[in-house]
Length: 236
Image 1 (cartoon, rainbow, N blue to C red):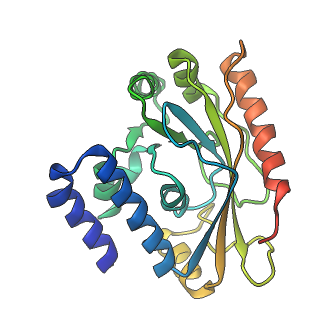
Image 2: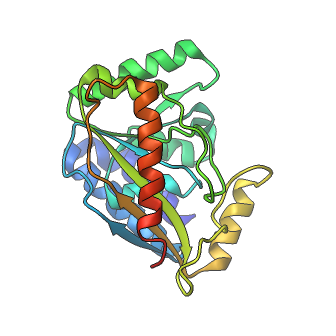
């Protein structure tokens, strides 16, 4: 809790005086410290894009995914609108530039796609979870294609990212950070803290461009790529 409050105070009182680059560094440092406080080790394989414009596409397992990706590379997330109302977390998400979407609203999805395209054209790194919800991390869910339209419209590359939580001592998949089904946020946080010895591993693939693919074809290809990346280094 103190670390979350410290992050919120930084956003409220220090961010207005900082450049965008300085803000991004602060977010990355805060995120790495948050993982450390939770006892989660970060392992990054592959090379995150050093600068935008680029759209990161990752699989989605946990409430911890966003912090983990921020720890590896600052980006602007597209998140469900519900997160905006979460105590403290919503304020943090808003402060670091998250784009919120009402997933049930087709009109709102188009609004967010236009906003994403504008951000990408401005040189931002934007990140999405095309599964649309969390999975148990064992199998990938189908990828929704709508948000990929932003990369096609802005004519920017997409970088696939495979995310896994592993038990540090065995290298096997850890289900502790999962936030799926009947899981509560508090319960998932408590499991993660109790488990300790968790490694979050992210494998960054090579950036790719549409090459004439429509968003549905590209979404299917990205899903296949992320599945392959998940098999590259299943152990820490």
